[in-house]
Length: 172
Image (cartoon, rainbow, N blue to C red; front, side, top):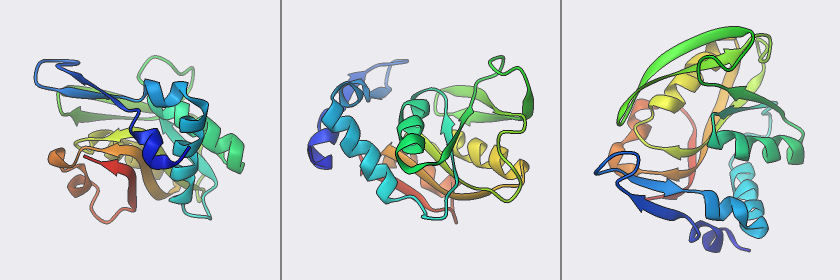
């Protein structure tokens, strides 16, 4: 399946998680094996070849980060919501388009000097990606890029990530 056809499977859910928000649901893409392969391959095509580790953002980033790690021999590190990790290296708070949140980096998972790509499903306001970059850089690693399936351009998340290598498979 070609990437364009795979991305056509994205489902729009109006008024979720609150009125006025249109949630882009990746589930139909993930459920189709050919679409999943096309999306993961599309993400890989944009990743810096010297990357060593995928930092996958909870929770849908996990579903993309794991096949990237397996398929191209990257380490995979989950960036988690608070209370999910037994040992935490760093925690960061950030704003979302509809609230606030926190992310944590597992202790000893990313080493100084490692080259890390941040992976998630959607780039909206850029707060989550910015927080992920902060966590990786606090560990002494180098962010090689931010790779997402979908970018919501009206929310201008790229502006918050100025100077960083951001790639999206689809911009709406």
